[in-house]
Amino acid sequence: AISFPVASSGQNVLSEQVPPPFPVPTGEGLFRLASAEPLGRGGFQFRFLNEAYQIRVNQVGEGTSLTGNLAAAIGLGNTLDFAISMPVMFDIAGGLTKYGTGDVTTSFKLGMPGRFPSAFYGGVEVSATHPIGFKGNQPLEVRPFSRGDREIATRLLFDINREAIGVRVNAGYLVRSGLRDPGLVMGLGVEVGRGQIFTVTAEYLSEPNALGNRSERAVFGARMNLWWLQLEAGLEQGFSRDLPDFLGMGGVRFATSLGGKQRKSFGNRTRRVP
Image 1 (tube, rainbow, N blue to C red):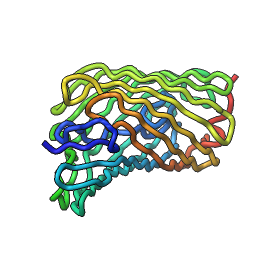
Image 2: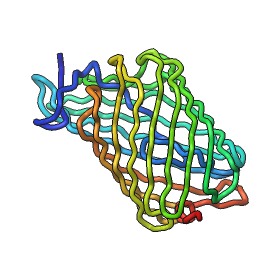
Image 3: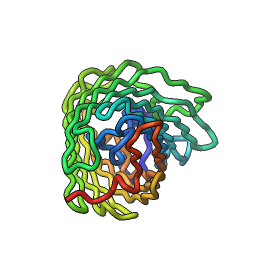
């Protein structure tokens, strides 16, 4: 079987056990965890998040796996958001490549209260991942690009904002999947430095995986909030057999308003709430 570690000292991960990319939060949220805070009527957010880790393929050589997550969200009302995301993937090792797009994920999020700022937000999100990706040149067969079947999940979302610290809680259930068994999805995250140009984040996420147990990961990141633009970089550590030991992350978010009266931005989003 083909196997690869993240580095020469990393854990071995069988190629057929590596999952397709997990959807990333669109709209308000951290690297992996979603936020209950809505965008507000007319609010629009675009996100690009790149993930990269080293691979070593047996009898082929060393290389890199890249995933560029493209996502956009819009506020349909003060409390209702619609989001769509799609990963673009590229694997290369020993001069061989595999590239294409992954499954498209759509979601609706109901978050309350529909005002900003607030010390507490609660919400529910329902998402569906549709197996409609495209695979191009693929002489290198490392990780699957598609789940092969529709995946449906729901999550309860809670935000607690106190002074310079914001806490994010996700608790949900994977209802249907052709790749993984149904099960609980749980996550906890914190953002420190609210009200500043620079903020740091830490989060933990656990969800069912394709091996019959759970994917567990932690992400440590930093952000620069420049009014309508947010730059982010992070490092993810995988604790389960289906994930690389370490994965680098970097991206950008752009926020604007499509006619809404309340113009939110990353600059005032991180404003402190008493």
